[in-house]
Image 1 (tube, rainbow, N blue to C red):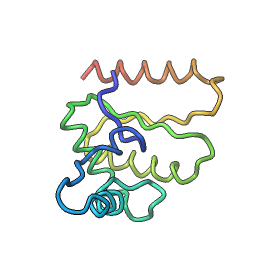
Image 2 (image 1 turned 120 degrees about the vertical axis):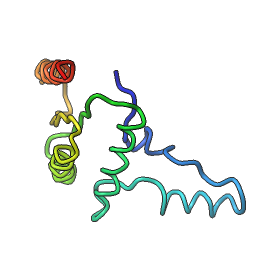
Image 3 (image 1 turned 90 degrees about the vertical axis):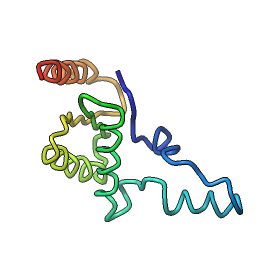
Length: 123
């Protein structure tokens, strides 16, 4: 069961409340430019994102984290490898997936996710 995410149009878009006092345009700008979790393509912001993932994992009591990236997306490849190291250092169970645009490898993905789920149940 997916309990939370850090997708661009998922939890990331509503992780914090926007201030309702003062100028609404300034409050929205403040949120989008300074408070909203950054995207992996923004250099130097990975630690902040990883801490948010760790906080979400604690808040929602997740058993494991799955990171999925599209093949040939180099920016997310670096991010995924860095997060894998961070997850290991912080004892966060993590499954790293590489997916394609089409569903030709769906059987293999299901097998990997099921195996990951079984390892979580053993703990």
